Image 1 (spheres, rainbow, N blue to C red):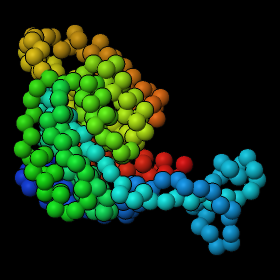
Image 2 (cartoon, rainbow, N blue to C red):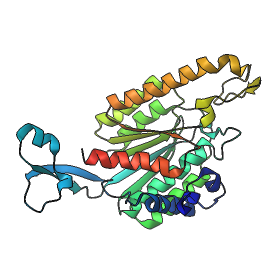
Image 3 (spheres, helix red, strand yellow):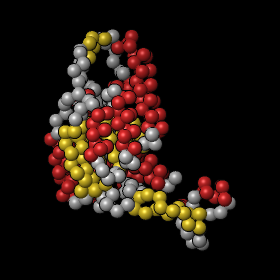
Length: 301
């Protein structure tokens, strides 16, 4: 295993108390491992086509246009000035879940992802803001691009209580009206909520012309359901406790959970949102690669 992986493994990151240090290690480790800059294309937008000239970079040839016209055209991009990114992190009680074999809870993992992405955005001199949400907006830090703003973001991430019921749908509606300027919205959540309400909130963001990315964070046990013996499940967000026989439920549970994940993925595709499924047993380079690489591929498409 390459040395950089030690900074990205959840077991190691669980021991890092300093969020600033963890974010820098995650991003720098990702860059070292991928040999690519995560910053390229993060805030760039397609501007126009122009005809190919000898010596132009062939990477920017629009092959779809060539297939239709039999002529070579290059895609030109322009970086948005004062690009703004809002990181929206779910801090409802279900995010506290950490299975027996997991190094980090969903909240702890999501917090590291948010910290790393804030570092990426501000490092490229764009503006990052932070919203922590449950059934209400708990924290709302307006975007800023100064390096000192990272300290405020990290302080908020380190001190936000993880509690309360989830009510993402109504919160998304509120934030869609509150955020006037077109922005990149990155949502980090397990989405354990009324899905129809959540999707209506996401539609509101898209109606307001925001560029929305959804990072769905789950614990491996929530997908794999590894339980063998009768176990008492503790309900989160005011759900009752229940003793269950896992082996009798496993097949039906997994079918329902996979149906839930596929519905989320299909809905995001229909709404033209970026979507990444993240398990808390994944190294952070996997999470960052899935998100940043997909954004880069969209810029080039």
